[in-house]
Length: 254
Length: 302
Image (cartoon, rainbow over all chains, first blue to last red; front, side, top):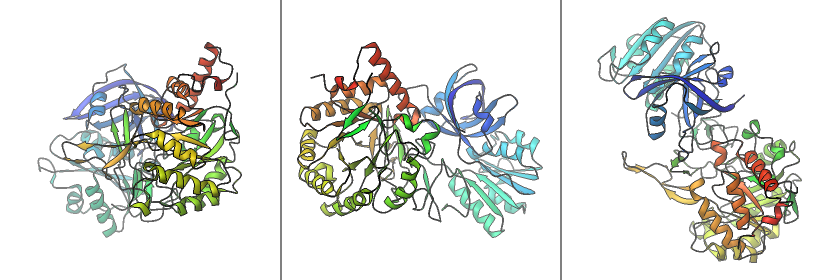
């Protein structure tokens, strides 16, 4: 069930340079699962298209959704100025979300791919190891992961905290094993995580990103290349917004 | 109060359609919109075989508009008939206009012939903004001789009335409208998107993988109104007007300029119920202005 409505901003805080946490009161929460996203619309009529942003936390009891996003342009810049009580148009939940599987899971997030892994980590039933990659010591959300996972490993590009290198460097260094891996982050990271999963014969889900327009699967703007012929157009293009954003790593070309 | 309009013998319960390519075949938006309330569902372009479309990024926002370079990704006419037309069976009140694309006359004709005996298809909209492969890739719609020729060829094979969808990327759209009429078009629709370009100044590169994309959205609406007005005064076939229609005022404006019906496109992306919101706005306008028949306002601004 998808809803388009006006959400109310409960609060917003800056977590790191250019990274904001926005908590919204919206009935979308009733239908949301980890790994899905919402479309947030600008209040400026000249910015037409929604900004697709992954869901970081789902609180059904309080009826709130939390998104953590990076300011990447004028639209997200506007969102970063929202204050408690402000209103904003939202649509969702969109996309398929992560299936909850496995006794031993690794959740991997890189950069702005970190936020969607938080709700996933909270909802996974088994043993959860989180591997989070950051540019530097601006470790947004790391403390919150610490509270909900069994093990947390950090990798930083500049080596200021944890493993100096990528999330996959950390996974190799710590000899991590699991029966399922979930990953969200930039494409080179997803590719490396998928390779790691293949080498170790671990099932791996990746959450993909692409520029979107409709967000519901109609416009075919946000396709990614799939290995098999897709169901919609019978070519090799799966829709990130509708067939994804979560795919098996073996299903898509990374 | 009469909201129904008739184009080439096909009666639409109201003049509101959605523009090809923004709405799929209605499946994705049927969660938001009762398709039975629309004048017609205009499908995304259908070719003879599946088309993979362009590389990504395919989408880019511009001020009060957007650029798209989807490249007409579609599953081909067979899957379309088996799946999309079957889906549309349940919405009998809305007419079905199938948008047809091709790289050559033969490809258009193959699609049109395949659709000829499909009872759910009420009308065909022919997208002539596709590149004509045999003529070095210039769009059919940019050459009046090609417009007339493709219209005549498609018309000879079509069982349903044909609407020629004109490209605005021409010096004088009236010439193209007349060419379509001369070729036997039952109606024309306009405007398709305006070719645009966006460059990322930080990366110093094109935003779209295809370099150029079709511009749509509220920013193009005044251009569309002008072109509909020009065509309405140049040809006698009915016009389906589109281009940036976002509000009921935009739709009325288009009808006053000469459109018998209108299509809502990009607005669906930021307001999934735009079609129905516009329809109710038109009905309110009719009550307020004591308009008994919506047809009475078509083209009255001279």
